Amino acid sequence: MNTSDLELSTQALIAEALRRGVAVEVLDAADNFIVLTRDGRTEYVKQATRTSADTYVSALLMENKAVTKHVLAAAGLRVPGGARYDDEGEAAADFARHAGRRIVVKPNATNFGDGVALLGDDAGEAEYRAAVAAAFALDRTVLVENFVEGREYRFLVIGGVTRAVLHRVPANVTGDGVSDIEALVAEKNRDPKRGEGYRKPLEKIRLAEVETAFLAGQRLTPASVPGAGETVYLRKNSNISTGGDSIDYTDTMPAVYKRLAERATAAAGANICGLDMIIPDVADAREDAAYSILELNFNPALHIHDYPAVGENRRVERYVLDAIGFGDG
Image 1 (cartoon, helix red, strand yellow):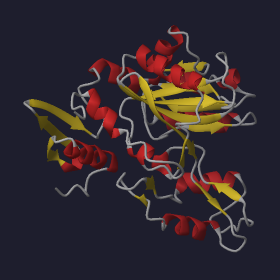
Image 2 (tube, helix red, strand yellow; image 1 turned 180 degrees about the vertical axis):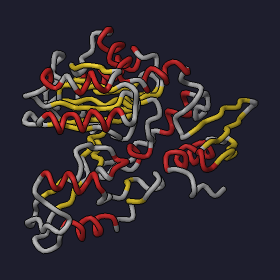
Image 3 (cartoon, rainbow, N blue to C red; image 1 turned 90 degrees about the horizontal axis):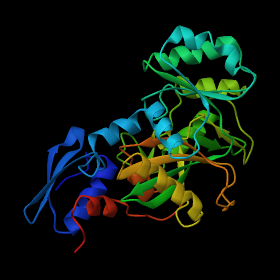
């Protein structure tokens, strides 16, 4: 079976299914839609993690960031403070409420960091209004949240258990004292682990409008030459989909944070979930340690945990097959 045109997460699921004696048929390669059969059991799977293990309403809940925050807060879990707006004019006029502190402006129901803006405590009203307009261009509801200090981690929870944890680092290059940023990006993109369309473990770094604007904010351009050993970040968001790097933390993440991720997933009634959590000090393993849950994702990628930039393959597709009744018997 030729699966090279499928996204990497689906490829991993198919390989594990075949190893378990599960028959696989690709129904729609462009949509990564497959059907699995074994011993009279049939399961349809889309994009590796859209399965019958999760109800339709749990997926809708996780897709809606405002509803997710409400559910998590009601369960006694910490989420960023802020405000929800259903009217662009009302949000734009509310600058004074958010001025003077770091904030995040984001659409309520987008993924991959689309439309998300991080504003510093010195941001002016024009910058704020531009961020609000950009977010409303993608969604009818926008959230303005307090920025939470700390590192962001992705927890993959399947079957009520944290199966893998990653720290995601925004797209970046490290200088050699000679090459400009454009050349450094090209060199990093030559890594065979980088590709496009989720067919490789990591996505290629882009140097488009978002990246050049972020560089400009640092008084840099693609032609700037970073010093030897100097790291230059090209985006604010840390998504793997926009060229970020992934570092596995599954074995070193304290159990307290894994339990929090499991509680949050249970509160949403989810079986397969990618949870994003900010942790100020990951070495703090106390029960009352600081954290904030940013969002839940109902169609989490598997390949980022199988092929991290740093760390071992967690083979998380195993747990998806277990969850839909194809155990390794």
